[in-house]
Amino acid sequence: MKTWEEIEKIPFAELERMAEDNSVAVPEDLSVKTDASVRAAALAEALAGETRRRKHLRWAIPSAVAGALAAASLAVVLVLRSGEPKDTFSTPEEAYAQLEETFRFISATISRGMELATDMQPALEKTSDIINRGFEDNRE
Image 1 (cartoon, rainbow, N blue to C red):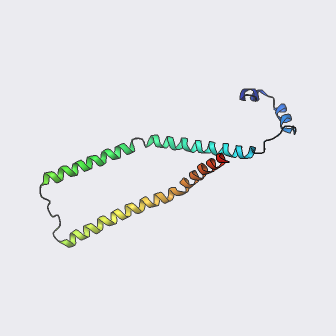
Image 2: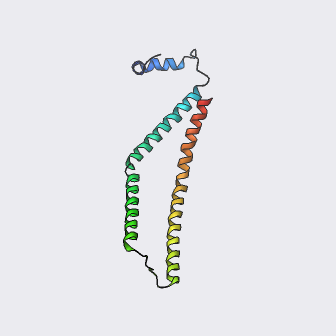
């Protein structure tokens, strides 16, 4: 079998003659192997892009955890320092109105997260299909 360097040095006319030579047997599963190779290359490229994107997000999770810990620590300190909790609303209606507003905010935030997840679904399905086809081809 020739190396890439040897193949690159072959003149174009010789390559054409070799391509027209019908005496060379072509393996029956050549198209399956080339399809699998193309899918594997596409998957590798997609994973490389994902790895690059993850490098940018490398500090996002530790920063979020640190922020959450700081907020929790501050909340604990404030609760312990204040002693007895004080009522912040004059009437139960004001408290209920504030509770409804808080629930609306939480609902809107969850809805936005669901929209983002729905928008990402086609990309995830495409990646999953490529991976599954690669595994199925390797089993055959």
